Image 1: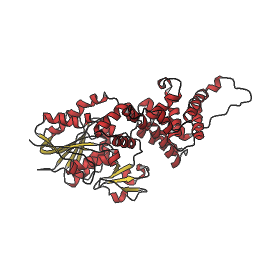
Image 2: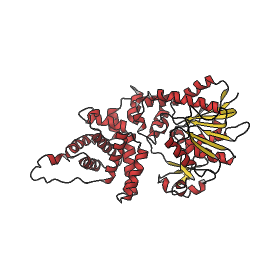
Image 3: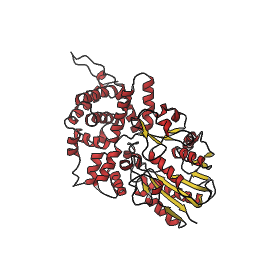
Image 4: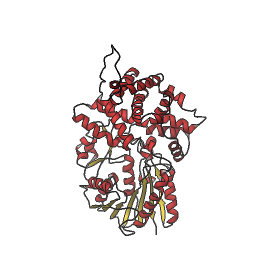
Amino acid sequence: MSDTSRRPRKPGKPYRRPKKDPVRILAFEALRAVDERDAYANLVLPPLLRKAREGGDFDGRDAALATELVYGTLRRQGTYDAVLAECVDRPLREVDPPVLDVLSLGVHQLLGTRIPSHAAVSATVELARVVLGDGRAKFVNAVLRKVAQHDLDGWLERVAPPYDEDPEEHLAVVHSHPRWVVSALWDSLGGGRAGIEELLAADNERPEVTLVARPGRATTDELLREDAAVPGRWSPYAVRLTEGGEPGAIEAVREGRAGVQDEGSQLVALALANAPLDGPDEKWLDGCAGPGGKAALLGALAAERGAALLAAEKQPHRAGLVAKALHGNPGPYQVITADGTRPPWRHGSFDRVLMDVPCTGLGALRRRPEARWRRRPEDLDGFAPLQRGLLRTALESVRVGGIVGYATCSPHLAETRAVVADVLKQYPEAELVDARPLLPGVPDLGDGPDVQLWPHLHGTDAMYLAIIRRTA
């Protein structure tokens, strides 16, 4: 029940029902799901959009605006919170979360889109009337009118400390990343202002949809017949959809012959498959296979060589996703539910092993912007034992002369080089292999022997890969 129903109305001012805007209501619902249920926007938004389309409320333009409102608000949350803190008369933590979500949607429209200021304010106030009630809508109106007094650059001059005084906090506010994440990414890049600014800016760009044509099941030529489809930059199996689009509407994707897979993820699988090997090449293992993208590509590549893939995944529901991704693979494969730290297979059973370990996901902030606000530095301590344990399993699972790929979708040094260095101290019978030649044509791969991909340099997620050979 709205606030107006509890108060007598003023004479001469008849009550006006708020106008329901399905686009902004949907965006608000998505943000509430992200906030209340710790959901991810990339999982919440598609079913909401699909339901809206089926109900006849939405067209393509509406869906694009709703998507921009949700992702734009999440990506710039840190910046917008700093602005709102200047415009609200109490700490933001004391503002009801639904009110804060409406305010953030309004701030994004004011500072992050081309929507005219008056339209951004009025549309957000109408949304507030629908979902919050008239009383809180007045609060929203007052706050947004303060926000509208400056553009984004004007606000950043007011709320971000000068770079020379506090470079990390300046970058954190301007580019909307937690300070600890800025510091970690900067360390991984090796210093320099230009690189970190470019990386943080790239994290706030909407990534293209990248498809993979699974060998033996689909071709890039087939996928390139789609609208606005262009070849990938580095992977011979990649196709980029430059104008977004709905991958599920593509026949090859619907049939599982192709999939949605970041090009960095494809490169990790290709590098493992192409690493030089002495002796037999018949048994491959994906030891952390969920949700199945790399497993599906590895399975197809293995099939071309007459090799078999074992895909292991600890979580049963994720193992189901792996089985779905591999269904129809042209060669032999098996999917099992198993804990990679306590494997059911014998030591030395495999010729090639991929261990793409669980991590903080700091390399995929373009796709999951809310992750930057959920992760904490202490999360690294939680992942560390698991990552080391899985790499030890990989080295024990591969035969002498075989190849291990350690991969993670995080550039944080504590999840990449530190893990590899610590484990290799315990395994003198293993050595790092230069991974850079295994990614032909890919520039800016550093000094090696491991490889770190970057959104601003390669247009991929920030995937890390170390290739290790067991020597004895």
